[in-house]
Image (cartoon, rainbow, N blue to C red; front, top):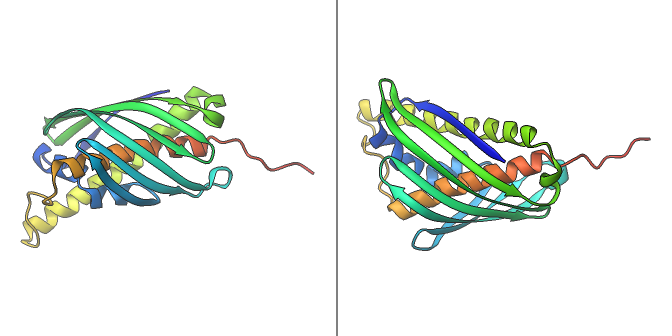
Length: 194
């Protein structure tokens, strides 16, 4: 499974990077996020809930940073495990200044096991792209709101003060939760016909 795409965020790159790696902001982008913690330098662990009929349950995620070049590039690997199997993969993104803000380019590759591995790759990739865009839409709204608040004098425009390691852990968790949500969305229905 491979998913690629671009998204223009309405904020400068120096404002985008801290928001991408802010645990509180990222937890809001991950549906059902229960916890996210750093367990070692460049290693993170988290848990989130999935509420889809065939795959309800708690999913654990682990993520490890492979490369990081603030504020322009990041590459990581991770695994999501839950009641219906696992997804292992890698992802990377780049942030580039553009005329209208920041151009985010991403690429993710995953190897599913269990029920997800039996699904159509085209369908899985479509679901992944939809979920990624939903998260990026939310991130963009948050960035716009932060800029408006900063312009009104309500907050500091530099973003939250959070260690780079904690910030990175959150973005990695998003990738892993998206992979798990794709897997759960693609699980075949278990209902029977009369």
